[in-house]
Image (cartoon, rainbow, N blue to C red; front, top):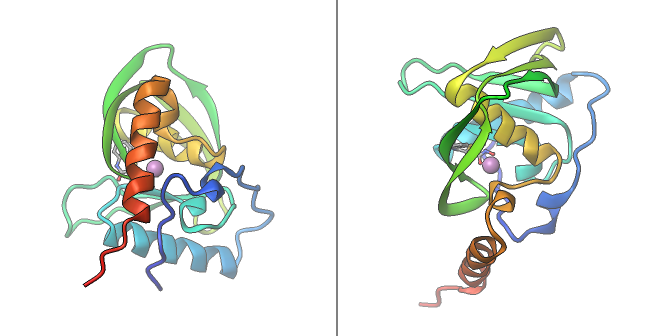
Length: 172
Ligand code: GNR
Ligand code: NI
């Protein structure tokens, strides 16, 4: 396994639409292992493959709080089958939009069909943080970031800040 570099806004790769996986093979499993290790090392609860520069429809997640009780989840080619008309608000962050947070409304519950780590077809009825996170990750597959839901003004402020941070190189 290996920790990969997480791309950050305004990297244009993050805007790519990810491609469906034809078969969950060794290569995809190795990618999922690397994604999980990268996510844990960045203290994230989810990661989409495009965040490490791979435009495949693959997501890893672990929303468990206890470090000793890890519960990794893998989603390949996820599709939302059903979503709530009820919305819930959550303060979201993103490893690709470092140190920025905003309250985002999304359907409260959703059903997701996907292939697991072994390529088996599964259906998950997601609620709460799990539902929020899976929807955040599925947006990444479409090249969407949570800041896209903010006003132009707020979004541009964040992009400007991140661009500045990126162009600042500390010289000793
Ligand atoms: O680590 C993460 N936390 C988080 C908090 C609220 C809503 C969504 C997330 S996902 C984020 C990791 C990430 O950027 N995944 O794409
Ligand atoms: Ni994200």
